[in-house]
Image (cartoon, rainbow, N blue to C red; front, side, top):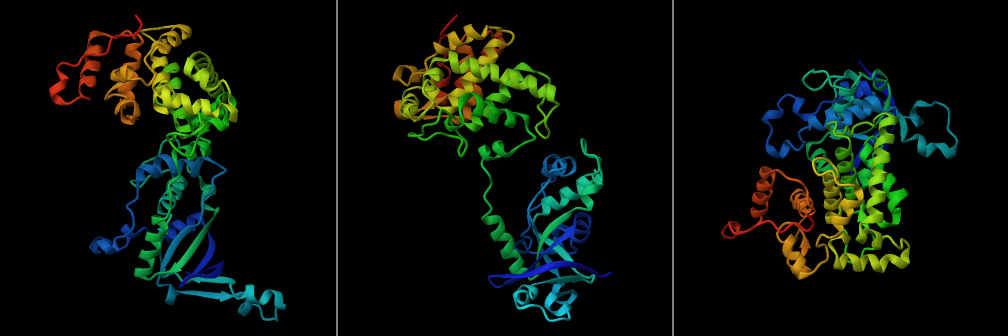
Amino acid sequence: MATTVASMKARLGDTDYFILSMKAQELVDKVKIPSQIEGWEDLLLEERYQRDINFNRVRKQIAPYFANDDGRFFGAIIVAAINMDDEILFEPLSEVITRKLPGLYRVPASSIGFLTFHGGEVLVPLDGQHRLEAIKFAVTGRDERGRNIPDITPCMALAQEDITVILVPFKAHKARKIFTQVNKYAKATTTGQNIITDDDDVVAYLARKVTNDIIGARLVKYTSNSLGVRDHYFTTLPIVYRCNEEIIKGSFPEGTIDKSKLPDKAKIRLYDEKVSEVWQFLLENIDVFADALSDTEESGDAGRVQIRQSNLLGKPVPQECLVRGFMRLTNPPTNLSYDKACEVLNHLPWALTDENLQIWDRVLWTGGTDGRIITKNRNLTTDLVAYLAGEKLTEVKEAELLENYRQQFPYEEREDKQLPPVVVN
């Protein structure tokens, strides 16, 4: 059955293509992912250039957004049309309209017109196959195996909404090249950029709120997970996010935080109050934090740089480990007050001296006073921070900590290694 749609013909490089919109249901009915095409399994490796679909990502992230968010929006899907030369006809307005057009409209009318699908074409996605599968999941409420998807009510409205499509004639070598180039130069957003733009993740929402309302936006770096030697920032947005997550988990031990949709307003308010309370207290009562934020203007930037060069708490990862340690100390079984927890944490050996760095060696720091942070050991560092500050541990937990600590050293040194002494009893 023939189908005619409005479209625009364009050219880029040596490729003619068409820009059009199609109803979502019509698009997913017409488009086949390469693995669904007969003979796909017999193709050579070079010809099987399309990515396999990550159905877990489609099911948990993309489809719920399409189904549940009325503000859903996404960019054009690029498809190649097999049999396009024989089966698809484009008629420009300049040929459809019989009367002579005014001169101003003649050139545009030659590239705007109607594209007719005769039914024998096969459309293959070059970019957007995850979105196409997500549309199917969102409309039906079922995954690739026909199973119901939790938290998705079939969204029939989506089926009749308009999707922008960029359509190119299928030529194997050209389709492969377009796919390769589109994906080669697509740059993934940074963690910080994702936190800024995510309106469904309550932890991200609160990270932005803490940044804007408590720390100050100019002092939180969002373009990177780390700080440079001369950066004027206090911390990074991903660290604020991770700290918020630990504060929420430590204060509301009710299971996994659902980051796919915001909780109800009452729960958001509870999370907000607790996260703000902890941050406010730490920034005022952890000495290095208070010093770093004593002057939040440009006049204080040099001071923050100096603090980062001389103290571990001027660096993002140790900041995260301190916050996590604080939550451990103020929760059962240790149950320190906020005041007492900050008092003992202030006594820990944070200054970058040779003596202090021996305590953090191979765990948080390596290489002497001009060394670097070991970012992979966040959990062990948090364990060590809490231990040094007097966390109450069972004999079994302390033995586990000692074993994990020893594992950081060469085999021949492990047996003689003991945990550093507790700083405050």
